[in-house]
Image (cartoon, rainbow, N blue to C red):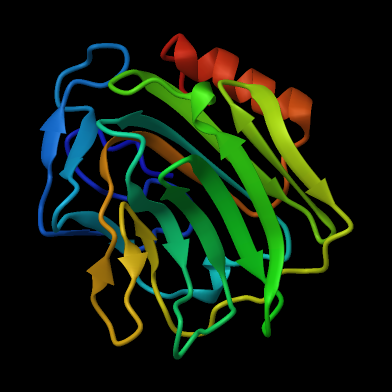
Length: 212
């Protein structure tokens, strides 16, 4: 769990190491609490969680609050795996200029490919995005409402080497690219796939400032 309340520290049970690559600026969050969100410049800043197998359970939920400065550029919001040492492993969220796309892989090719229309987002306004992944399905929620899903999937291929990155893509030879100009609020990583009622409750609680 990353509350991003003035520091980038995991307060969850796993105590993951968190690095703010390139820095970032702590600003007011969606509830106007000072220094409670992290603004990334879209040029050379992202959050990095070094590789740890516990980041990649068989089923998972990623949840975060985001305030996008721009929507129609090609950037990466959330990345695991890369194109070389962890090729066709992991997955993540990327803006393709015309949508936000969640992808993950089989180990040799694409597995989930889920497109979310940019009409679900407004630049410079906060939104909560959640992806839930079971062994055979994936769902995307925006502000507690399911907006896209895919069934008939196989288990995703887990990375073995590369970190998890928020705000940029993992480079094939190390480093990062496709930086996203975004302000990050509360981020959660769950080791199970939340059901839709749980996602809705998470949104309802967090939108009013309650800690889940």
